[in-house]
Length: 90
Image 1 (cartoon, one colour):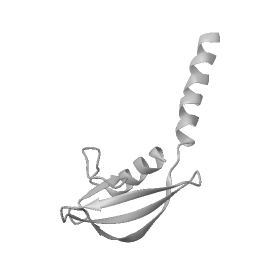
Image 2 (spheres, helix red, strand yellow; image 1 turned 90 degrees about the vertical axis):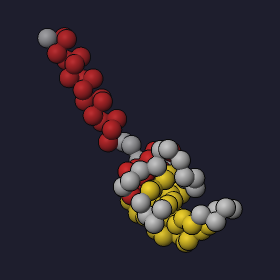
Image 3 (cartoon, one colour; image 1 turned 120 degrees about the vertical axis):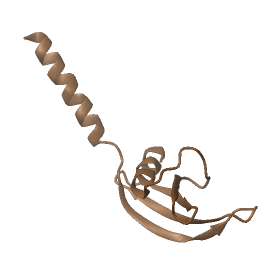
């Protein structure tokens, strides 16, 4: 019986920890930008459920979405995934 309570309590804790993660609530266009080498990208401001804001950028004609201002390997193909990553980083 005690083992079942421990398992249930840890499952509830794991579930509730996921609900407290910051989620994107708003994505607002900030403007078109260009890197020093001439690569065009678009900048967005992400507002998160924890009250913080983060920057997100779109590259390659909005085919790659990145948390922050850099094109890197952690970029996503979907806007919402990049917005979630930006909120997690903020």
